[in-house]
Image (cartoon, rainbow, N blue to C red; front, side, top):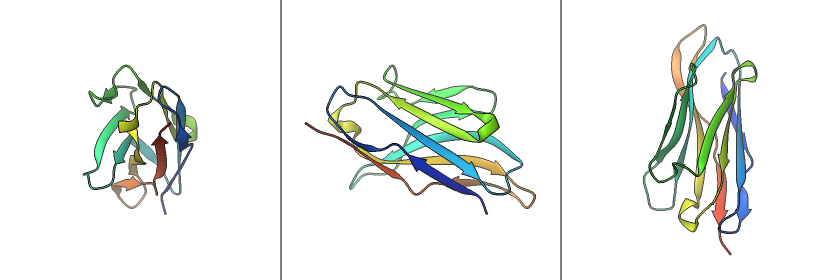
Amino acid sequence: QVQLVESGGGLVQPGGSLRLSCAASGGILSINAMGWYRQAPGKQRELVATISSGGSTNYADSVKGRFTISSDKAKNKVYLQMNSLKPEDTSVYYCNAAVSTSRNANHYWGQGTQVTVSS
């Protein structure tokens, strides 16, 4: 069973930094892409950043220049370095991965990690 486990969330002051990590495990043959999404209370889940197996990245306009996504393919991990954080970045951040196993290919979600930006 594929599992995604996030870590690294917390409370940070505006202008501060956090680094989120996500580790995928469980019967993985390959990962085609990984990414981060976020959902604030009362709002729809939105894309933050994605990275393909080839290293191509994509960012939401709201985080370009402040956030950096990276991955460690050997460890099936993805990271999100968040700098110059703003109160509007406050959300639950979810890791997503497009995973192929011996049974199927599917998208999987982590349980989410809370990021709160407040003074």
